Image (cartoon, rainbow, N blue to C red):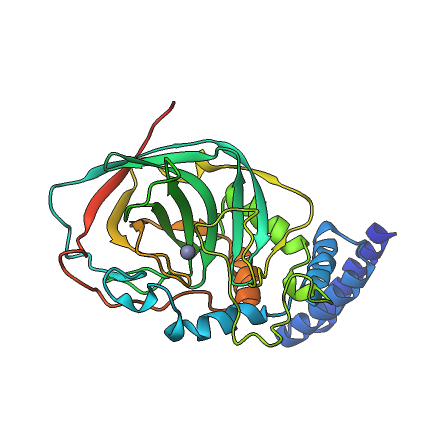
Length: 340
Ligand SMILES: [Zn+2]
């Protein structure tokens, strides 16, 4: 039927063009009318099915009220946040290349099961079991979770902020390390690019198809702020199962159970990083984090980044003062893939 319609349409189109005596505007109008009528005859294609699916997703995607509320109060955050000694994030001065050459950041990553969680102010992936580790400056840190910020929290002095930032959060081994080097965070600036990546596809396919906190009709996950003055979240260094007495978690694991992600494909070997001593960028702002921010950006599809920012809005801490020059030293480093 469709082929016949197209043939008839083709002849009709030919006769119209002949009768129009090559008048361009009439040709254009004819083509437009025909393409509209053919579109109505087409069977439902994969694309149209996808757009119906997208429409269903978008229907449930409202802005998370928690993220905006959380970050709008950041000037009043407690804990170490007001210290201004070694707070993060900061603008990284590319003219300051540190001293002592480049140090290696040895990393060994593998595939691991990950539970994705709508954490209210960000999308977080909790690693189940062992997903990998980094060794820097003689200390080894194990990969615990990752999450995103929009736009990027860190900024290099020679460019604008990036569209997004991925933080891979590692905790020192042994777990009882209590000095100022408890955590190591790989920060990857991310830009929109149609190439995307398998890693981000896996994460955002699940994110786009699962109900989130804002889809909940009740307050069982603590979405309703009620008498709270502002939302509180778990620290970036707290792991699953932690109970915060008297505090609301504001978390919802995404539907469908864990997904498997290959972290070895995510971090490029021989990538360059600016390393500095800083803090957590969420409330409590503990000054226990070694940040390694990659000079080269990762790519993510525009749809994926928009699905995140449509829901979480601006999900970032503002740039902090540089702090003490004795503390705020840069070290250039490069990533070295290690197989164990
Ligand atoms: Zn972060």
